[in-house]
Length: 119
Image (cartoon, rainbow, N blue to C red; front, top):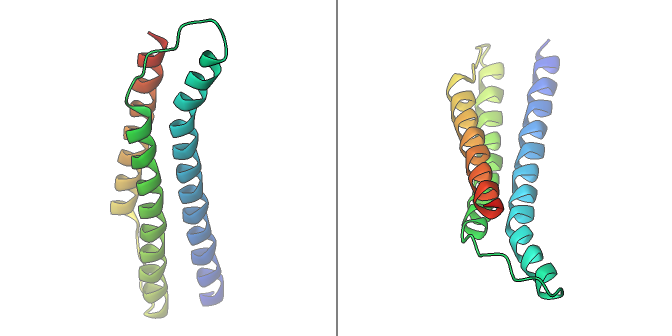
């Protein structure tokens, strides 16, 4: 069962990395979306949309948090690996709470950017 536990730990780490890559990619999309809208409106006769000023800082924050998630996943992998090797159980209560708060904060920030750009 130790082998199964180590393999499960590696799968969990890979899920952290997938999540990290997704957050970084979404940050890139958020950052480029405002630029794309301004470019699109500059090629037409319509007035340019107002600059919200929030998309680029939000994008930078998302890229930074994506990188931090990768580091947190590596730290968590190491802690669980040590616990498995010592015959202990490692729960993820604190990291679950941290990641949940981060995801909810980004969801609210993206909603605010969308609402502001649609107004």
